[in-house]
Length: 246
Image 1 (tube, rainbow, N blue to C red):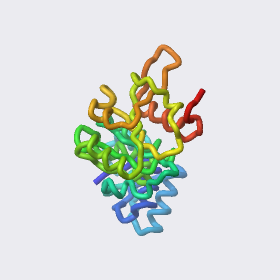
Image 2: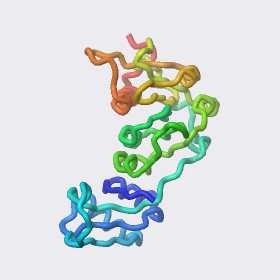
Image 3: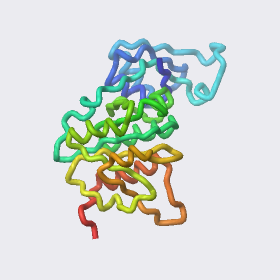
């Protein structure tokens, strides 16, 4: 069971999986707008809401100092890979592939980006990846509920299924010679990002149809994985990526 403390994550769970929300706990006193929306929606769908007195004697911690509101929610579940890829066609669309993303803060940020940019699904490695935990869901601010995800035992092998569905694999590496702004956007892509330390593994990179970079314009040569994802998704969805950019 997950204890979520971000009201936007709780709202998304109530909207997408109301039966998965077991209870909502709120501290006595004035609630912020988002938590008030949580309370109203929870009551509408029949989820128990309890109000806890600030003088209840419960030990105070960081969450209590920030308001102390939370909800107990059943963990979300992955979907089969073929379900993740359903509806892929030649008209476009974006998916994310994550090769051993181990920091829950980064994983949550990637799910939030996916929800913002309309990513159609996320494929993650089963091993050596951060689990979809309370931290991930809170940081994602609802992105986990709105973006389906699958787990692969072998990412390179799973790419065959992705490619068979008509989706092209676009790897990322700071050492790549191709510029992401030269990538044609007239096809569906799965943008693949590597782990925080070592990037894409060799076999993962070999299975990509193309590997690209966003060249540094200054003295810092690389970006945090979530920041890099934001840059790449912006390029791929803004029309700046064109075939044969001059």
